[in-house]
Image (cartoon, rainbow, N blue to C red):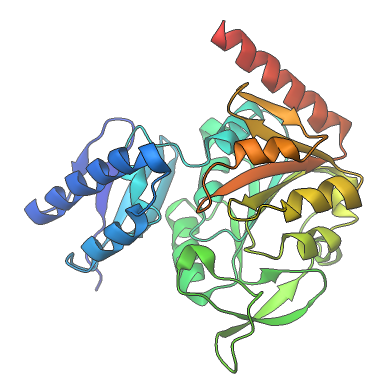
Length: 320
């Protein structure tokens, strides 16, 4: 029987159920996050994963807010930054989700990993939204399903990948946060089912018309995913895609801007606003770290364009 998880409350900083060594490790993880934050957390994941080898195999359950608990293996290099209470994971997304709490939308969390955003968006402070968490990896899906369970099964996990059409693919990779179906290992990897976004309409998972926020964290399959969501993207929807910092051609943004009817939007830290992109050169300035991803948004919805304008106005008022 697995030991009970360590408990950590992000609001209070309380760490419960940890032994002395696990508490010492927590201090090291927090200190490492604070120091490495000055250079986009470069090297943090690797150091944390080394430390994890010296820890007993055990989970940590982090209370993200009063109605959201997120559990993962203690010492995990990708998620342990959450022990640093000043760290905000993809804060431009959190701002959008918080600002949309009263909107009746569904989150399609594609490439959900362990379900962080599905846990948060389905929580009361974020509006208790319907969420479908889509994750192809068996290894990750077990942890995703556990997070659905400990949060009252209030979001739906689906084990599949997202692509242009329905089918199967081989999933491979060495990091749980970077598994992809773009590689072609010779007889290796895990065979996984693939669906297109529009298949969610065909299969009765979502209505053809509605409001959607669609997070596409799909590790190199963003363009194929967009191609497979033609009908869904005609609704009141926003796609949220990752622009890789090591891609000087801005491939995903270029496709959205030049090959789709979607308006391309990016968070600009200089203005602290979600800015409409008309020239891709703005990304040369924003993408300052080659080892991280940057979220870009695409929408053809007047409703969401108005919401983003209101969000920018609200941000401006707070800064005055």
